Amino acid sequence: MTQVEAPTYTADEMMAVAAARRLRDGTVCFVGIGLPSQAANLARVTHAPECVLIYESGTIGAKPVNLPLSIGDGELAETADAVVSVPEIFGYWLQGGRIDVGFLGAAQIDRYGNLNSTVIGEYRHPKVRLPGAGGAPEIAAWCRETFVMLRHTPRAFVGQLDFRTTGGAGVTCVVTDLGILEPRTDGELELTELHRGVTVEQTLEATGWQLRVSPDLRRGAPPQPEELQALRALTPANDDLEGRP
Amino acid sequence: MAEIVPLADAVRELVHDGDVVALEGFTHLIPHAAGHEVIRQQRRELTLVRMTPDIVYDQLIGMGCARKLVFSWGGNPGVGSLHRLRDAVEHDWPEPLELEEHSHAGMAAAYSAGASGFPFGIVRGYEGTDLAERTRVAWISCPFTGEHVAAVPAIRPNVGIIHAQQADEAGNVQLWGISGVQKEVVLASSRSIVTVEEIVARLEPRPSSVYLPGWAVTAVSEVPGGARPSYAHGYYTRDNSFYVEWDEISRERDRFQEWMARHVLEREASPA
Image (cartoon, rainbow over all chains, first blue to last red; front, side, top):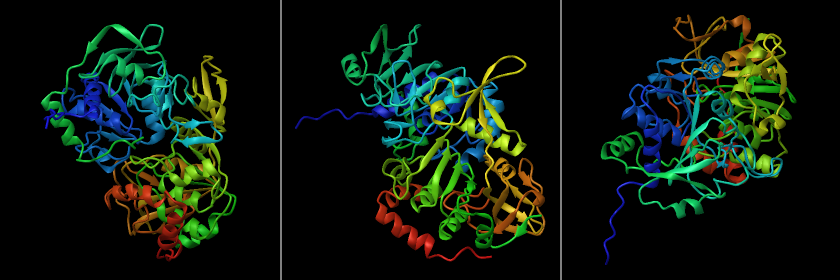
């Protein structure tokens, strides 16, 4: 029997690590729940201890030890520098222009970084009714830049969105389980980095439009042991982030 | 001055068929017990307003209380879809459900406007999204600078319902922790019901708490555990495992109805 070398990390872990690395220390970050929250907290407990995490529940400077299930878990309030009301967080802090990075997930993305989190199918007779906008439209509009995280599949990376929930003009990077996409000067996303073990062909196949590949395509470093250790300490075993909106 | 009454009486007197009703609580302090009382009293044709419809709205919608939903994010936080909401939207079961959807910033501004007595709120948003066509929004220019902003009509519910940690015997209410839009919804509504963990002789002032004077509240009901499976900071934590279980309970119509019969309909209204 052939012994296959066991993978030491999953594609999702690679995605979380790659996204966390993009957050510079000291960044003020408006964090969506699920994959973005995982990555932002990983950054905070590794290379970016001065990162300020803001959740839409009004918690400013949250420092959870365990990842929250919702955007308003008690641990976020208990570890925050301050807790403010929802009108205040969206008014003074977000639309007031105080946030550096908005960090979002979505169900669909197009080549310009526009996002759909509203419906799959026709609006009045949807195939799948998704949760809706939440904070995303204004987060993307008013943070200085927006990072997006989602798994790379043809169902997610589509030629035509079923609904444009959130404009993509501020998106500066899209981190997936295959690599990283960044906008060219004309605003169209191109593949700029591949994770270890992933091929360009595989990424093109997983994209529902003709994805451009940067001439300076980088190869990302695999997760370091300390990154994996910190990530696993944040995420309880078998905790599935799949359904997290 | 707020009347201190049993929850069943508060709902009977203050929530009517066809009303615009908002139950608020942003993950924290969600007024589940009050929602269950509305279901037990079989209110119909409600326009339900809530930024983040989650389990309690899934229950109200699945039990046929709602005609319309005004919201900005409808899901089971951290778990996935609301199956009863989806069944209503995708298959008109048990009733067709009209949707009016916003962004969080839009709803927060609309509640603030409602509380302030303004006709509309303003948001620097809705630009470049398909949402503008699906919601009530209009574009206006700032009369001073000409800046282009979105106007959202004020939310003014007939009844606003929240849960808080404490009230005193005069009906003054204090809540703390994540405070969401609870103050706004009470002040934006014509009538209000506040359920509380406990009624105390005297409220200890707490820094950063939200205080609602009894003269700004219609009814206060003591309902210990009234936010469960949501949480009440300082009293009990969020029952995350129930949120995960709800995914299974609510998936099929039969099982949902059976669960509601056993855990909501057949249960006594809360103690006085």
